[in-house]
Amino acid sequence: MTTVAMKKTGSIKRSRTIGRSGLSVALVAACVLMLIPFMWMVSIAFTPPEQAFGEVGLIPSDPTLENFSTALHDANLLTALRNSAIVAVIVVALNCVLAILAGYAFAMLPFRGSGAVFWALVATTAVPSSVTIIPQFLMTRAIPLTGGNDILGNGGSGLLDTIAGLALPHLVSAMNIFLARQYFQSASVEMAEAARIDGAGEWRIFSRIYLPLAKPLVAVVGIFAFTAVWDDFLWPLVITTSRESQTVQLALASFRSDGIVQYGPLMAGAVLVSLPVIAIFLMYQRGFISGLTEGSVKG
Amino acid sequence: MSTTLRATAPPRPADAAQNGGRRGPRRSPSSHIRMTGWLFVAPAAVYVGVFHLFPVLYGLVLSFTDYSPISRATPDFLGLDNYAAIFADPEFLNALRVTGTYVLMVLPPLVIGGLLLAILINRPFFGVGFVRAALYIPYIISLTAVSLIWLWMYSQSGFFNQFLDAFGLPEQRWLLESTTALPAAAAMRIWTALGSNMVLLLAGLQSVQKELYEAAHMDGAGRWGQFLHVTLPGIRPVLTFVVAMDIIWIAQGFAEVFVLTRGGPLGSTTTVNYLIWTEAFQYNQMGSASAMAFVLFACIMVFALITVRSMSGRSSR
Image (cartoon, rainbow over all chains, first blue to last red; front, side, top):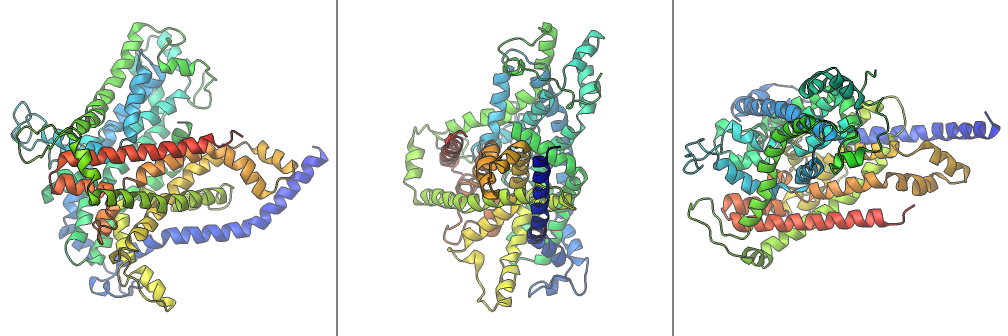
């Protein structure tokens, strides 16, 4: 190693140690600042409701689970959790199969015009939801032979206010197709070619060779699909009319509309609704953040 | 034979042309393989086409009519009347102004804050994974839940007023005053999106070649100089992407308005998306609501394109 290089690494090291203390202070401050609202959410969720109106301490003096039972039963959260879970399972499964399959084909099995088709699909991600939500509402209402509709889709309410209707706009997300194509574009084609020579069919090549190797992609697509449908507010708000088909976000928001806001049950509800998302995120955190950034940056 | 997908990918210069679909793939696969490609794509493509692409066209047609979902009579074709009407509507113009202000309030702190955090955690240190996750979590929680938490934070005896009390300052009616309601919503929005901006910008920072910093250091550039001449040009593509996506998302603010303020006080937080929702689903005016949606769409596109152009156009090195 030359002396110049030695000197340089030395000076970098020194400036790093000086910067480190300031850095960690700034980061601890940032983290605390970011987590403050969550600390209060948890604290109020465990505070007895009669204490939750005045000034609440960060650590509840006599913690209780009362708010959770109120949220689950009175506020319809139990039904809503079940509805959201069903919708989420449908949406995650379909995205993981159909979006990944399509992305794989766009990357590995291009056909005439596949580039144009791909970009037409991806373009939909830039369209604001308010542009499509009215037509989607009318189309959901006009699905033939559902909800009292005739074969032409007239007369009834179609899939409005149903579980299937809640899932309808989320079944396959173009963003997930995009991520899948990006992922498989950096995959090697040699394995597919070797398998083809061995006489393997295309479906077999995808499902037995490439899909098992694409676990990080499946995690990203799964988490994206799950959070998109679990966190969605506008679509359920628009198509749901009865309590029986409410989703978690609607049940949460109903805490707000019932006149005086009951912060205890509200925060308990927020904890319950956020827990699945946080749990899934923490489980796949590492792969998720790297998979996410790769996909979007290469764009 | 390789065992992992990504590590072994050889450089494939023919890629772009291949995926553009103009030229055939390298080893001209049989028509059977191309057929399979179609079959694999078809379910997703047909679905997205029907439920996401077609609605754009449908919405455009609706915006030229007086369609109402209650009357099942055939709607009348109005030409550009809806557009003329909404541009004369003070409520809509106010909503456009509110949405624009909202974007301008949220965007700069969000991007600068995200970049700062990304720079801070772009080194290995103990607990970096925790910090990264902690900062990202506000983004994955639903805007509804987040808004409800902040509804309490802004309430009369909530966090912010407790904070002011501690310093002997007068309490504020954050969400109930037309001067503070929109900034209050904006502050919450900054908080939720900071982590996602940070993660994307972090990926950008990590793609900047280390040698460039060393070269700049040898040339006598200080920290600031390195930031200006190496970091910023290096992350420009990511930065542009982040800003464009932020604009697209923030301009569609709805759930936070619905939960925090219901558009009030005095329309000071009525974003275009909120107005569209009331127009379409409270008053059943789906024609003019669609027209509003397309004006919003156009504004977002113009705004985002101007940003992208000005950010990528500024000096090429």
